[in-house]
Structures are given as structure tokens and as C-alpha cells.
Image (cartoon, rainbow, N blue to C red; front, side, top):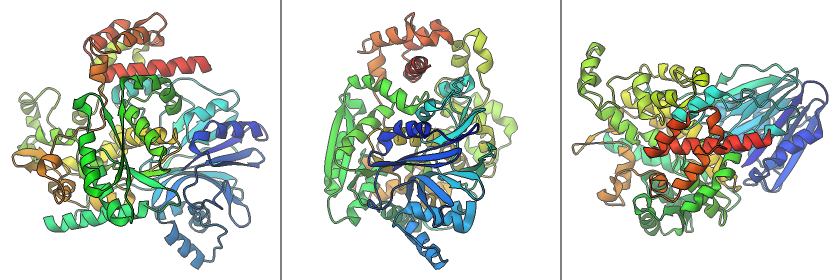
Length: 611
């Protein structure tokens, strides 16, 4: 795992100090080495965390005649297979790295090389013959890639904080993006908190000419839930087990010590099971718990660790974790409201003491329909509608359902399941002079939802979560928290082959009523039943939640901190928001909203200090 950087000076030669500062800003992503390369007005840089080909994998790397150069972050899991194809086509290799495979794949197939890749990646290729830079990001957005543009320069990199080193950095805030942050707890791509910076979307590429022309983002891959296959329950179970096993095996290629995150939930437990079956040594596993028993899942992870004989490492997260807030705000680079970044930080810190790479169970809920939001979406959707009821009857049905769960399968019906501060709260929160920044629909969501027109109910929301929440929240959270500790995290359940397999599974094998209650992720739970009792497998999903409601309550230890940070005269939030509404959120112990504002306040403070 690594960090990348690139820079085009539109006014003259690329200044060495710019690219050097950009790579220095992400030294934590690559503590094992760095490199820079200059091509007149263009420069690229790299920070290396050595995982594969430790001896000869240094970057930037080039092709045979040095007309193609790459800075690459990630891993290709099928690089050995692609290398053989390229050798057969006449290519000669100087290293054993997956990086060089990408260089030659680009030479052989151009931009279509992306169709052949399996892995997690973000890279920039400098093509000196065509005088352009080719930027690409993996299918799911596991690895980040940001693009900055101003009148005098264009740049790309792995983290937002890199761009502050660019001369005359344009730091105008995007307040519509901040409104969407308050709505969803993240800023959806291609937006960032800065108007001058965009995120390259997952499964997309873009080309940038040396003359400064930036093309449109081009989608090269998407998942398709419309092509279902017919199998029996037993056949689907066996096929699912095989798909996970094969993916875990592909993700184990490494020249450094590795282990696994283990929460005790279904997904991470299955990953550890398959690792244990494949390795001839105990798996190193890592878990985080809390003093508050309602949030502590260590007893479950310890049960799984005992079953598979792992070397299990644990740690308790205490309330002083809020002291991390300045560090988190700096590294995420923009407002990021998922409070589980706190335990994610700690479990990454714990793992890095023992290994350089870990596998995680992220993606199981999206891929195999496990979230409680999916269950509620199905539970409150009238059976008659699911068999073709006319939409004219929706208004009558909605009177029978909880207010938060309206009937219907539109984007407007789905958003209440995933929002944090709804429109009413946000409308009250923004001061009158900023009301124009209140958005009607999250950027890109309508286009995405429109693609689900022919999908089943569960597949609709699986697709939406894969494209939004999983990419913009889960993967961002894990990437930043892990890279803060120079730890590589691989995700066997967020894998092109696994998703294309799972997309063919009929909905009823994933989510349905089971013993009178709606259950999701049924295939994975049925695999777990082979080794664990039902009360363990079918317990209520807990997630990686933080006890914010306890910490922020009237008797909580951080109540005074909230008053000082959010309501004092020095609070920067008061520039944009009505303090009386912030007081209401605190009084109501609206923990989600409070954390969003707390993180935003810290980020604004750092932004002001830098400015």
C-alpha cells in the first residue's frame, strides 16, 4: 500500500519542492521509501509501503523505453496471470511487481486494461508520447484519488491534505457539500469540501492533457443485478462458500506478515475461518471493545478466535478517544462523520504492532443484504406492493406505516433509511443567509437510483449502498484510519469476482422472513451455522458502534466539552448555523448530529488556522 502524487504546472516547469512536499505530506502511507520523477512541466511522486516484491518494486516505475511512467497505490490480485499473458504477447519484465504489470497492460491494451484488473488501486500513468496523464480508480473505490484544478496548476493525490502545498492553493469551501455531509455523514463523490477538488469516482477513469485539458470521468465497470441464476439452496450455499474461499486465497498474496480484523460478526468470522483453513500457522486476529457492555462484542470475537485457534489481540477503547479528533480531522482532510472511525483507528493501531497487512470482513452487508435498513425496507414494504400493487394506493398504505418508513420504491422513500440530519433539521440549522446551500437530493443519487429500475427491492438498495455508503463512507473510513498507521487492509468481500457472483443470487436466498422474522444475509449465516450455535449467528446486528449516546448524555463525561466546542463564542459553527438549533440537538442528545457538528467544528478550526 502506498501514497501517490502528481502535478502539472500550467505556467512553466514543475517545481521540485511542490511534488516533494506533496509526497512528504503522506509519508505515513509509505514509510518504506519514496521517489519523484520530472518531465518538464509534469512531475509525479510516490511513497511506498512494501508488501510485494520488496527488493525491486520502487516507484515511479517505467516501461522499457521510458515513455510510460506510473505511480501506483494498491494491489492487483491477478497480476501473475496477467504477467503471463503479457509475456506471451512479447513484453519483457524487469521486476516481479504488480506495478510493472499495470505499465505493460496499459501499453498492450490502453485504457481497456482496466477491464482485466482484479484488485484495489488508484494510479496515475504519465504517457509521454500522447502527452497525457491517465488516472484510474478501482471498481469499488477501496483506494482514494483526488484531483485539484486551478488556473495555474492541476494535481492529483491520495489525500486532500497534499494539495495545501500547491502554490496559490484555491481553498474556497463547497457549502452544498457540507450540507450533504450533514445529511449523510459523508460528502459524496465527485464532490469534496473544496470547490477546486473533485474525487475520482469508483470504477471510473479520467485523462488529463499536459495542456491542462481534463476529460470527463468515464465509468469502466458496474455491477448488474438483473442476470439471476437458478440453483438450489444447497448449491447456492456451496457456491457462496467457494466464492469466499477463492477470494480469501487471492487476497493472501504477501511478502510481509499479515492477520485479520475480527469483530465476532458473521463477515469477519467467515474470513478468519477461511484464512485458518488455508494457512499452516495460527492467524493473527485483532479486536476492539468498549467499557460500556452494550457496545462490547469482545466475547463474540474471543469465541471465534478460540474456535479457529488464532493468536487473538484485544484492546478496550476508553472515552478519552475523543482526544483523537484533531488528528482524525487532519487526516480525513474534509468533514467525515462516521464515528466508528474511532475504533477503526484503534484496531489499526493494534494490528500494526504485529503485522503489516490485514484482511477485513467489510462489504458483507452490502454484498449479501445484511443491513437492518434492508430488513426495514422489506419489512415495511407492503406484500401487495411487492407483488405488483398499483402505486395509486401508496398514500393510503403510508397512513398505516411508521412515519419514517413510507411505502414505495423511489429514492425519496429510501433516503429516510440512510439520513442523519433530515431536511427539517438542516433547514433550521442553516442561518437564513446560507439557506441557498440546502440541497434537494444528494449529488448523483438520482442517476444511480434510476439504474435500479429493473432490480428487485433488496437489489435496489444493495446497489445504492455499494455506490454510495460503502464507497464514500466505509472504504474511506478504513483507508484513512489504516494508512495513518501504515497498515494495508484488504477486503475479500469487496471484490469484483465476489460481487459479480453474488449479483446473480435471487433475492429470496439473501433476505426474507425466517421463522416469522425478517432476516438478511441468510446464506452467510447458514454457512456460520455449521460451526456456531443459532443464538450466536442470528443475534441482533451491532456494527462498529461507539457509545456516543452515553458519552454525550446529560450525565456523560463529554457534556461540558460539547458546550465549550459547539456553543462558545469562539465556535466557528456560529458563522453558518443557528446556535439555538445546535442547543436543541444537544438537549435531545441527537448523537449523530452532535458528532457531525463536533467533527465539522474541528475541521473548520484547522482550515482557518492553515488559511
